[in-house]
Amino acid sequence: MAIEATARDKDIPAAALDYAKKRAAEIEKDFEKVSQVRVVLDTARHLYKAQFTATVVGEGFAAEAEDAESFVKAVDAAWDKLFAQIRKRRDIVGDNRKA
Image: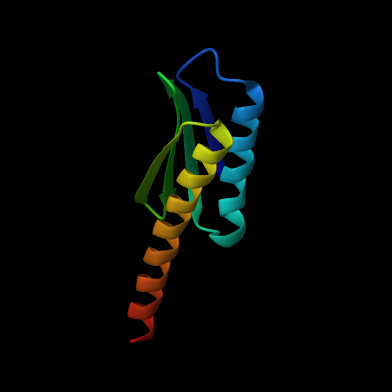
């Protein structure tokens, strides 16, 4: 699985990028068919933004979150949204195959 983490602003700390990469790597534990995860961190005025994009068996999933306090909270919120989207799709596909 390829993980790509980028920062749109040069003032984003390396620790925030490392944390985002660590969270992105956790997706592979639950979903083995993930081929690529892209993480983008950005700041806008007083908001910290995190955006996750994942490719699972040719299908794209995206999630974005903002937080006024820290990158960690923004990354966690975006990751939770992405995880929920992929899990929901997996459950739908699994239900269709059982029928």
